[in-house]
Length: 577
Image 1 (cartoon, rainbow, N blue to C red):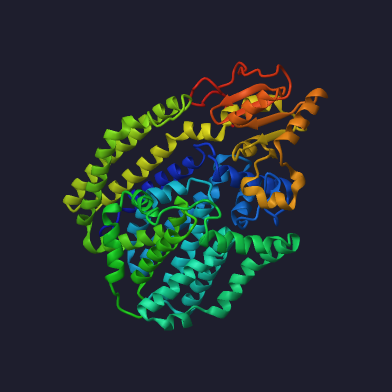
Image 2 (cartoon, one colour):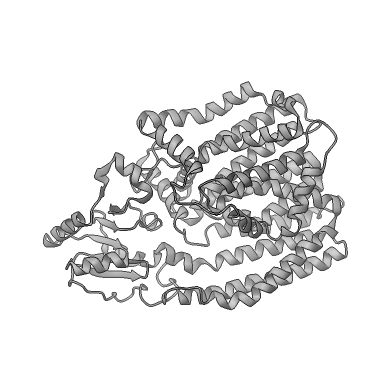
């Protein structure tokens, strides 16, 4: 075997075990609101209506994001049916694509050991592995941006022939186009800003002559233009909302109420890069300082990519934790390049740091049980305490083993630390399942399905359930609460009931006509409706929601037999959908 690399038998064994765990975890948890339920439901509606042009949520026009992930999820549903692993398959594949690209790029741009290190580091970084198992747009965006980044590195590397350079640059342009179809203009703006910053820093203005701009732009527009033209023709209101509201105003204002301090992403990066935190800054500094022979400096480009994107989102008026996920492949390559230089001894610090963090974490594990603010949540958090404790224990034992191997100069220290990080992260996520089921409300599915006929109206009063529509395979009638669907409802106001008074009128009329209706509402809304004397029979209840039908005794707050709603259990009763 090549020095520093595992044997073929060990490599294949580890790869198969890794893929088995990776794909198993895609379907091991309930789809959690908001993102997971939202994007699963949008794809379900796209498949059900066969409308591949106009994205809709709850039957309402939804123009916040382009449709690539909806297309991929809908295609997965068509091929494999509806379910959790199907809803996460696209993001899971995007995560694997990023790992494979990091490994291949490290191999071709640097050497075989760097490629091996980069793939292992990215696969075991907590944030990358975690978000690859969450149905959110940011991992799809990260996968396509990684395709653009790695293709650029492969095209511009020393020794690339003219056909290779052209081919990889076209892949780069295609990657940016797919990134735009994943989440908007950010897929072009960020790579372009990185390229400008790199050429100014490196003074390599000749790079722009090697980008194949003419043919590349033709590829880019061939991929992106058809949908943008079609959706604008079908919906004249789309261009202003998408390009002005969702891009300019999102970045320059707090229109989406997602503001945060300038240091918002620092703790996210610290947690997300584990177990490699101890070599993060060394990798970045190595990337900024190291100059490789030749005209193109891959380390400088990678460091520029990571730093510029991190700063861009840090100064943005809109912040969510997943926004910085596209920087992780660049960080994995930088860390791999540095570890390739220093050898196994460089792993002592990250292993020691993981051990220290897990040791400190052990003292806080008992406090997890007290995190539940409501009586219903307390047993859920108490159950999660054991999973958090197991995560800390895995971190302690694995990091200790990795530290001892690193002291001896054993190359298996890298695999040991990577396995520790990956397994600990997956355990922490799997243990969250009872809390996820509670957030999604799926413990109420049996009660809802027993009450609902295909033509039974189902209202959502003062709130919108992001996950239940997907599991129920139907849309809801919104009442009073427009939230993120406000723009679409402005275009199609007939699709909701804007006032609670109008809802109450319809509800009473249906009850008088002996016509079944069902509603999901917040506890405060339920209390207000009770005071108005609305006929309501409670069929499910928890601290987040009350589910009622319009028949039975007025003000009946009891929960029917067999419901898990008020028992304070972990949400495991009933068959999981």
